Image 1 (cartoon, rainbow, N blue to C red):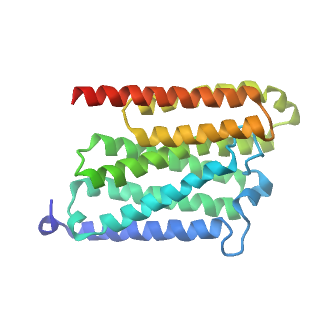
Image 2 (image 1 turned 60 degrees about the vertical axis):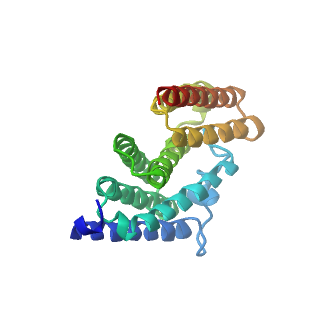
Length: 263
């Protein structure tokens, strides 16, 4: 569709996406302590730091947020163009992407000002919203390369990273509430969780989309670095993270090659 066939609700959607992006960015600045608050690694008495639990990736992993935010900002600007106003794809996905941005910002605000259990709730809601958005995106006809990158690609990157971030956030909370003796079984439970992450990652990779797999492999690789080179040390969990990343990467490559051959 074009501008001539757009509706008043389309302009409302465009403005809502811009507003959600603005909220996310302001929340990120507040949540990361840019305005004088507590730095992310020190939030919740350090529970969210890279050495606070067995399933936390090394700090370098979090640089992926820069790519996610840049992608979301680019999407917000692009979808606001008059040529995108009447796009059926934007109508089906714009509000959902706005929701993921709001939940993204709410997580940082909740981490800065509320409790650890509430951060788990918010990130689970974000994960669900991203899964729905990404699933709808890949089942909708694409409208060119820009649409593929800024909708499918950015949402996939966001989904892949938040999948692992949800695991890390939940592990941080459980580390705080479980008795000290539970640490004796940390290796076993850590490996079990990473097997589940690998299964989920392979399921996502089966659709042949690269972005979620890249984000998951990135996070798992840095989780392995954290457990093999930092505290708390765990060779079992570090090795399991490497294997999970390799398996997801392998399935992704196989599926992409199959899709290219069919074409």
